[in-house]
Image 1: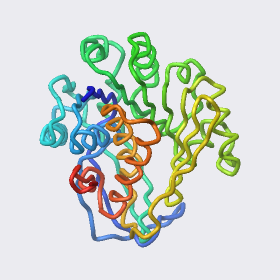
Image 2: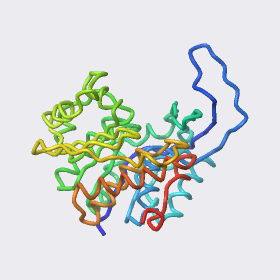
Image 3: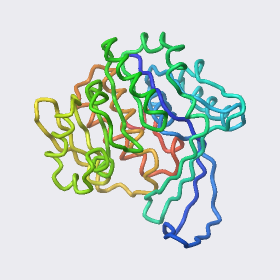
Image 4: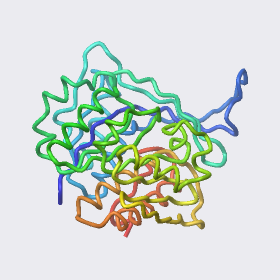
Length: 300
């Protein structure tokens, strides 16, 4: 089993159920609030650990109860949390997640300690970068840190996976140090500055390839995903239409983690996508972020 290093965000999620998402100026009542460990980086580390991976996490939390809970939860599935940064005087990141009746979500993130995942911290933990085989990152930590880690990982000949969320226009240099970039259909539009990018999917994927990414995987919710490889070949993978969607939170994070895990087991990229699709098919049938992630036996 190759070693996976997740570099990213750690949040405590405040999850509430609503009949519909509020419009501007509208107040919506709910009586249901749940605290669930989350953050895109922590979700991916937890998923990879629970699925049986050899996983370490680099991230930052505040010196508070939320931070301790997040670290304990990751450790419970075997993730190495020994080098997670505990920051004095800064709160752990939190996310406010509204889930509507169809299971779709809207999220507001307060970054908190996630802003402290800086280059100096990554340099202090360079040994973890050297020891891993696969590096997975997102964009809920400073972009400069993501740029540094991607460039350094490629110098060390690691496989780099980028989940570009929340999506922004990214410098070409970052794409050139990424082996797999995995946006969803909305993020694809943000990356390319084209809200209609998902309507001409293969062409949009090839634009990211032209920017330097080696492979592009666009997740399409209930429609599955599309893989475009560096040779220009594209393939569609379809989700299970029979599953009952309860909550889509962490479906994308679990998909990314499952890709990393399958590659750590020396599976092909196509096999990795098929495995990841099965994992996310389970995740959407359950509430919450890390609480929705299945074990390896459940996926089997």
